[in-house]
Length: 315
Image (tube, rainbow, N blue to C red):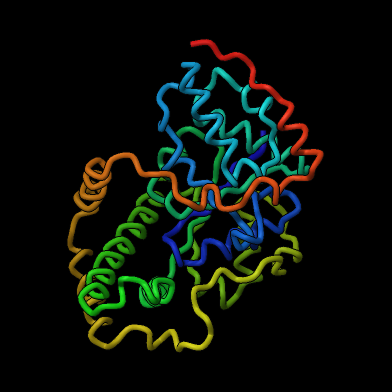
């Protein structure tokens, strides 16, 4: 089996750039496409894991399999309908592992990489179901993360002063929570995660990537420093990112961060867990199905998949 590598960290902290750097390694297979700025997020352990109940039940597995087959991520892996149905009976973690191991094998890789910022909150679960998995976490200065978040939301309902304040407070609390999760995971599993900072990675990309390769047990390859995809930035270059937030908004951000730091980690985690239970099962996001399959697969692939009938999965 190939080694699983997970890149984690809060959104807008550089996870896409980091994952694209690592994905250039010849021994690492990563699901990528230009419409997703290179690395594509699976969101598997937030949106799919346990969504359909016990996959040993035939009807549950069919619902799981058909959703997966309709998704961009699975289309980009190139697996066939028969391959997925032949996994039954299985579990969620076993199914994802089989898909990614097959993808790595077809790309002559000894490891596969997945990047979904939301998986930061599921790192301990992922570590438990994949004992051989390693993690690369990235942090970024709060001001830069917030500026990127605000620029990305430009023109949306966050533009009013009150909504901007609520947005800043909410995402500041998230930033503290995500970084605490990273620190907690690193404290519990120091040999399974490499933590870096965006600023360090930007200042010394060569040595930083080389250290990450050593951590992953892979030789450094200078081709990793190239850029195969356009940067996933929310900044147009026309706006000074240091001036996106007003002085009052910066004060609000720093006060919120300071107050949140006083909340015990266990309490803050319980708050997020309770919120998730109240909101219930999240809808599958639109980016799961952003790209049409006809734009991804060759006519031969389309014909093969269309001709594959799923095997019988009796309840």
